[in-house]
Image 1 (cartoon, one colour):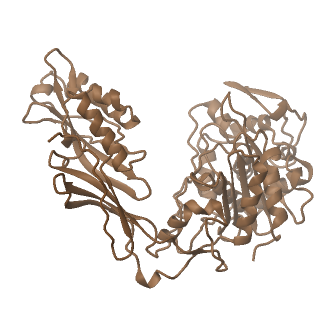
Image 2 (image 1 turned 180 degrees about the vertical axis):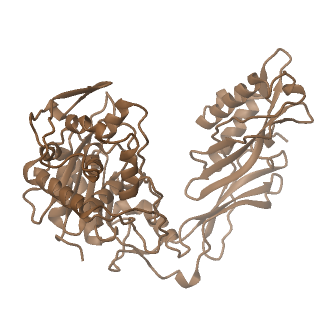
Length: 547
């Protein structure tokens, strides 16, 4: 019997609460190899403290190719390239693995009884839509007669239990669509609210009702197809008592509908929008364009551009490094390792800090970088705004990153939300809410989420100054697009560079009453011109304050 885990016809069986769709094997691994080792015999008999560097180089190259999906290249590093490529490809297709990771152990490399050098590793393999399958295996390397090393191909290096007699099969259990409602009990369905369609299963499962997808990776006999053992199980057991009980979210059907419609102003560009309550962080609307697939609003990673100047201003105001009426000149250009400039190379000689904020002057903010320690911006973001801490909102999120700058140029960039500063609309809506209230609230889409965040309130004086700066940006600055709307609206625009061959992303954050909003348009060029109409459309269609 060949040692390739070929695909086999699906078999179906009906469980009590659903139909199981059965698919055959598959898996791809990702890796970071390395480690330190004790001296020994064979490949260790080199008079040094580790294995032959050439062997480890080949191991790392094989695993790197495998991780990146370069299967022909990975297979070419083995003793049986044809079989290796077919098996790796079969695993990938059959087990629906996406973006896996594999980490070599820090120790445990040894010469095995068959003369190969064994490198242990841990495989973490996300099964699409279900969860991560984690296990340990070993990568064998054999020195060749003509010199050099190759991976000694065998099925067990993919998984210790994969063999000529046993293989893996993925089983998915199809469950009834979850019932999800908004905060008032209005039913939320994907047809009416397209941006929510990819999230409904996660919302139901994350709320503790036992909903959401379920499945398992099973080891099966190649000849009979019978299950030998279950290697990994995914999903919660359904709770019969909760089967007919809808999961209530913090969302508001009216706000969600308005948000979906507002993204029509993006003119077909990728865009996303979040609106949340200032007083408690509850998300009222979360929308993406396109609505299917990736949740840019909560999981995207973007440079926030000049909307980040809210955090930068907070850091400067907290230590009394600048006051709104202080003169901070705004030249066209400022060189810090590279040339920085303002949007449309504008300049405002003799401008106050208030003017720098309302006109979003990059050079003025960069000129103040010496007022902050290298890690201070990240510390303020984390301590007062919760950015970079772990959030639990009821759906998967990216929670931001503000690394310590590597050099003065990166520090200059971080002052204006560029460099390695990363955020998304969920984060920037929360930043806005914190700035105008003084207190961070972990955002939420469902009730009862764990809250591990620890923050401190902003001083009242800083909150008052931030509110004044954001209000002036609407009345006299770059967010005039919102000036005709009712209510005391404050806002900040942002333009974030992406690359030399792409237009800038456009951002706008705003607050009115008890709501904070953030929107981003990929390649929108400017914040006021691209994200501005989206936020204007939303706020025009909803009450000044949510119920």
